[in-house]
Image (cartoon, rainbow, N blue to C red):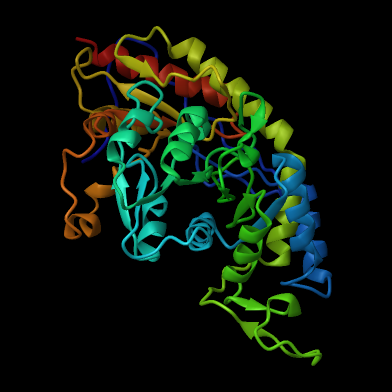
Length: 415
């Protein structure tokens, strides 16, 4: 379906200026404004370059150093960095002892990894519906999904906004459930003043460092926890289930080369040059967070009263570092489909995205027996949502182009 320019008597939306070169003097390839983009500066390049010239490319001091920095930022006692957030979720489920016969509750409005990690362990994902205003998982729906087989919940801090942690913690305590926070969107976010990586009642918290997230390691993830026993399990799970520590060995020896595989683990290690990039990026987290808040505040101010546009409600308890900025297209007030709105934005050089297709809509989950209609709020939301550009390097001029385009398209399709 080809995108078409909207013809009105209003001035055409200006093309977005090219992204400013950040590292290496590389110019932007076109003038499209994308929904997300990494920010790499010379400090990042220098950190990676130094790591590449060091004696260690993997299993070196850079990994331990960035784990220490993550503990300082999140307030957690322990951090384990891994190759990506999917790996983080997987080993968190492993450490929690999730396995065949168990059920784990999560949200359908998330990337597939939030549920796939449950399947990796042989357990069954159960999808709870969302709050129609915040788009986070609804505690009441979670409560309704609990059975005698429920072992854990994996709530997602969707778009970076903190979910109702206190309500979910009470549910977990009441039913003796394990909480694994999916904070892939939420590095830098606080709930009632506490970083999401160290909230009481959450056994583990998983983060993502993909390029479109607030900070990046190229690819990467992490699990934080305050539980030493879980930490030891996570350390082994990311590296084949192997230990060099005599304390945990079944057949300890003084042989310096000796190691033992205690569980079936995986090769989910992060390299030292990825850790170096992540460490440099984390130094900029306060700046990244502040800029994302500024952009979000301006979007809210400019778009709140646009007819046909519904904004995501932010919980009062959440001090949010927003990863995604979500619009709802109100088809009761606009004479267009979400696809038509999306295509019109593309014609204005704004490359939006949709986050996300409900997990159980995917053919793989259909084959497992999941049917549409499970979560009405989530399904209704999916038909109407669209993500606008939001990232540290987005300039005021570029954001003005996005805002102007939204107002123009909404005005054209207004009933």
